[in-house]
Amino acid sequence: MAGPEFTVEQYRRRQRLWDVLESRYVVHLVLFLAVFFIVSPLIWQLLTSFKTSQAVLDLTYLPVDPTLAAYERALIDRGFWRAVVNSVLIASASTVIVMILGTPAGYVFSRFRFPFDNAVFVFVLFTRLFPPIGLVTPYYRIVTTFGLLNTKTGIVIANVYLWLPLVIYIMRNFFITIPQALDEAARVDGCTKVQAFRYVVFPVVLPGFAAGTILTFLYSWREFLFAFTVSTDLNSMTIPVATFLFVGDAGIDWAAMAAAAIVAVIPSALVVIFFQRYIVVGLTGGLKG
Amino acid sequence: MAAEEVGQAPHGEGVVGQLSDWVNDHIRTVLLGPSLVALFVVFIYPATMLLWLSLQNTRGIGETFEPAYNYGRIFSDPTFWNAVEKTLIYSTGSLVLSVGAGLAIALALNKVLDSRVRNTYSTLILISWAVPLSIVGVTWRWMFNGQLGVVNKLLIDLGILQSSYSWLGNSLSAMVVVILADSWSRIPFAAVVLLAGLQSIPQEMYDAAKMDGATTLQTFRHVTLPYLRPSFFVAGLITWMFAFRAFAIPFSTTGGGPGGATETLAVYIHRFGIQLLDYGFASAVSVFLVGVTLIVATGYVYFVLEQIEEIEV
Image 1 (cartoon, one colour):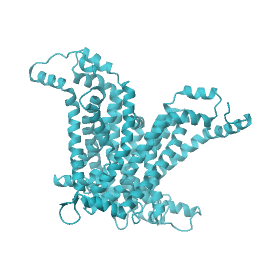
Image 2: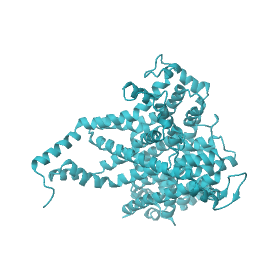
Image 3: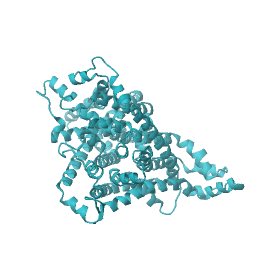
Image 4: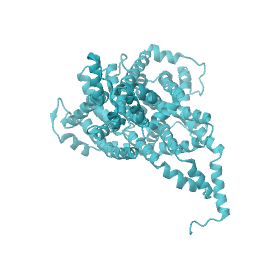
């Protein structure tokens, strides 16, 4: 064969370069740099949040006289603790509604044929891929018309639009991995179709259900566009929106903004730390057919 | 499908029994109906209104029906084309950085054999994905602040910069910062998807390549890349599509500034629709954005449907 003319020496030299690139040191160096890039902005926020206003102006790296005063200014003086409560309520309610609606729907798409089933499924996919910014303008008008401006309900409804199609899709993918023989066995044993779903198939899909739940909670927690459009008042705004509001101040209180940011990040970080595996399953489960 | 034909559930008695029978006979409606009704209300209704609004002249007081008005304005308005240009730069920059860094991370993670170490790395890398989007923005805004930002401080202390640089006050550097912020938030997703792709490559393929005396580069080109192509496609498409519509990150990092230098289409739509209350024009721009997305999304849907065929075979 007239392949590339390699001498053994050339081959070894090339391979040696790759052996270096593949060595443990390079692998860990790459990962270390990645972790540094990912984590350092958050560390910087954390350091800033413990600083006095003077330390912020003095541009010190570490907080001199570390203090929790910035947290007090953000959470108590500005009352943003209420935004934290709103965020928890909104993300939880959105997650519950989306999972209750989306799980059975995903099951139907994984099991049953019905008229226009593929068209309906493509419609669900399309709603997921539709850019949310496109709905913001009409949604703002609808919310205003129905008196839902500055309400938690208005934000929850937006979250249902945003995450329900995703959950239907993810749950369908999880259900597909479960053999239909399981449903059939349950039916032969005298289960109704609902019982077969509830008592036989659902327990098997539980890890996938957990992944969907965690993903929906995180997505609702980090959402900004609709939360910001619907509400900027303390009765209903979320903590990511509250943190952003510092930007509008004449002289930004950077330490207090960092404190609010840290408060908004802590739940995200905790969920990632405890449920990393489920998140990976959820993120990749939302992609495969 | 088969599940419907097998077995006969016992027929219930009384109202509860009849209800249970009805549910059993209409299982698809009962399980799927609520979701479809919900999607109809929260999606079809506003989406229809979007089309309707895009045909209205809302510039002055009240609304008048002028179908061509807003679409005409789009094409003659240079600020619209500026937003299109910025959006393309922004989304392409984020795509290259996110998928490039994601690939490097995935390849490295795939080499880590100890699963505890690998999970620790993945956890740390996933964190930026879970950070609320406006927090991503304000964090980068803070780091790159002209007077008090840590980036200037570091660069001056290291002797790289003589004096503070206004990162967010300069068109080019502001764009670089928003792209970095966007990638920061998107890299974990690309890494996770590509790692899943890498892990699906059967070990035998590598063993066979090794037996044949392939170099690492050859193995990468002829084994890894072909297997990775679907994951690459999905990671790239999703990253690009979602960066193309990005709102929260550019909006909270720079607000679209300086002078529209980082104003993506989404920020542009928000400015007209919500801040200036020119619903009609914002809706027309939205329709444009939806159209572009639709074209890209069709590619994705085809990909998914192809996979469905594979499953049903």
